[in-house]
Structure formats: structure tokens, C-alpha cells
Length: 65
Image 1 (cartoon, rainbow, N blue to C red):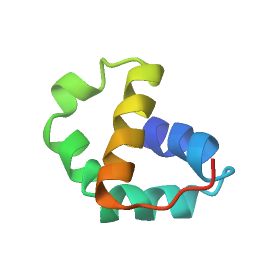
Image 2 (spheres, rainbow, N blue to C red):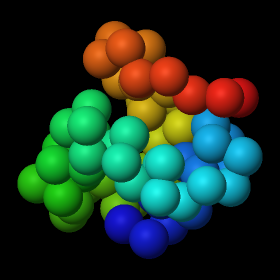
Image 3 (cartoon, one colour):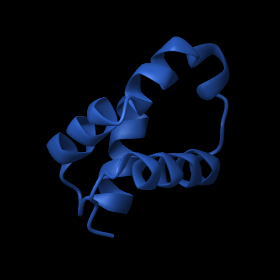
Image 4 (cartoon, rainbow, N blue to C red):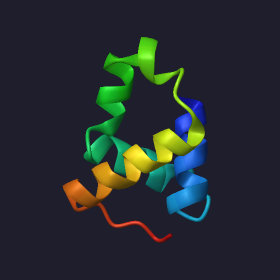
């Protein structure tokens, strides 16, 4: 999950890991990835970012990039 925070912070929050973690928790994406870790840890970076972008938009999460 550290990897997810790293890529989300770089892609959406100008490197702010705290904002990335908070957004993941607020949107409940964090819970989804924890619950299904056996599958989610095998997904590509691009797939994860696309999925997270869609989830942020659906949940109304503001991001900077």
C-alpha cells in the first residue's frame, strides 16, 4: 500500500503523501485495496491510477493534477 500512496501522491497531489493517503481513505479506495489485496497488488501502475482517478471523480475528491 506504500506503493499506492507513492503513485497517487505523485500523480494527483504534487507529491503530498498525506493528502494522497487522506483522499484514499475518504474515498474508501484504501479499504477496497486492503480488502482485495491478493488481487490488487498484481495490477499495473497505469491500471491503478486509472481506477483511482475514476473513483476520485465519482466520490467528488479534489485533486491537483
